[in-house]
Every structure is written in C-alpha cells, then in structure tokens.
Length: 197
Image (cartoon, rainbow, N blue to C red; front, side):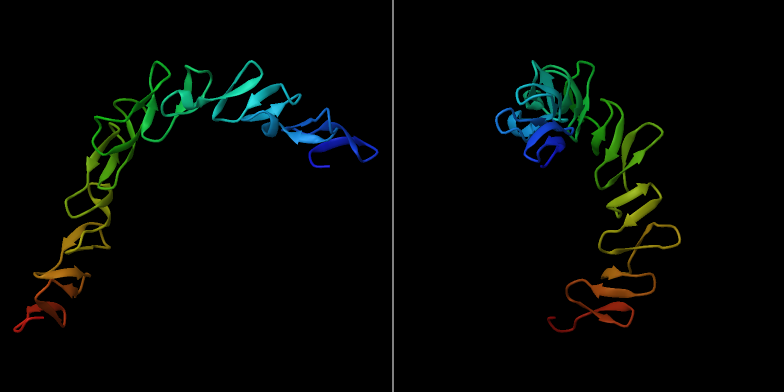
C-alpha cells in the first residue's frame, strides 16, 4: 500500500507517512494534495497542517499566493515572503519591480542589484550594473570580457576584445577567418573583389 506505514491484514492502513493521510472510506493512504490542493502535510482528508511553497495555510486549507502580484511564496493573503525574478520584497511585504537600475534583472531592493543583463557586469562595491565595453556583449568586469562582437576577437592573454584587421568580420589573434561582403579572404587578410562576388 503506497504511503502506508502500518497496516492490518494487508488491506486496511492504520497509519500513513508524511504527505499522506488515511482515507476514512477506503482505509488506504491518499496524498494530502489529492484532497486538499497545495497541502503538503495533513492529519485528515479535510484538515491540512502545512502547505507547499506557493500556498499559505488558512483555516486548515491551503490558499494560493497568486492573489499577491508577482509573489512566489507568502504567509497570508497580504504578506509576501519572496518574489518572482525581476522583483524584490519591499518594506510593505509586497513585490516591487527592479526598475530604475540600468541593466538590472535581479535586485535586493530599489538601489541594490544582484544580477545583470547581458552587456552589463555587477559592480560589487555599490551593487549597480555597469555597461560592458561596446565590443563586448558579455563581461564580468570592465577588463574581463567573455565574448566579443563580430569584427573583434577575444585576446586570451587579458580577456579583452581586439579589433580585427580592416574589412574582416571574424578573426583570431593571427589572421582573418571571414571577410565582409565584396571582399575575399587572401591568406590572413581581406582583399576587395575585382568582380561582383
């Protein structure tokens, strides 16, 4: 018998494990969540004593936190305890969006960012997002780039973006790999096409 800890004659359950309760009609274990939506721990099919994270307990039943905008977990219909991504828990236990912080996608409050969008890095001194250099769409600091735009290559010695040679759209530290339109690859550089190419 699923969820049964103690049974009689193999057909009647006397005690169930956590998350289950004895169904008084069938005398077997049933998941609390099956009869009480959002319930993680119950002592009968009608009485919940603990709820899953997106619910709160009210009058022996679980009520969804969806009534509070952008709330992930809550303690009541008016008190949020954690928020969805891009929001922070404000002083009134409501979720406020991380706005006004350039490049910020996750914040602790209205002035402290903890996660930045691509094109920005987190300045851990003042918890703001700072823009990467124009040639670097993903960076970890102003001098530590992890990816470069077309027309640049990532220098392995110092993780900065170095401009490719003239008319070259993709390159590495020693040569051009692809040229811009109307140019062709000739060895390590790009030459203009004499005919339409």
